[in-house]
Length: 62
Image: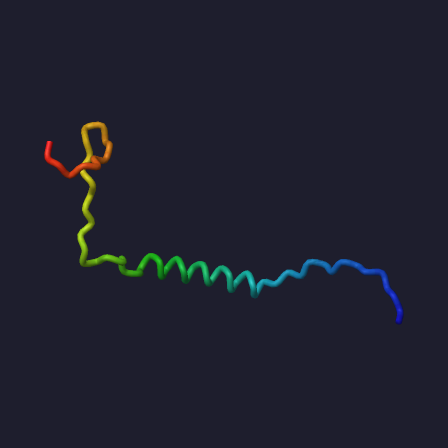
């Protein structure tokens, strides 16, 4: 068995992989922008805040 000196392989530039990654990112971004919201029928309730902007943890009237 012959032995040879090990040499590291050079960097191989693969533009096809970069194109696939870029297209996947663009497709994911586009789908994320046009995907319907998870709760379209349920109303989102905004928590009541006091004068300082702190969210009130109690539902009792003032």
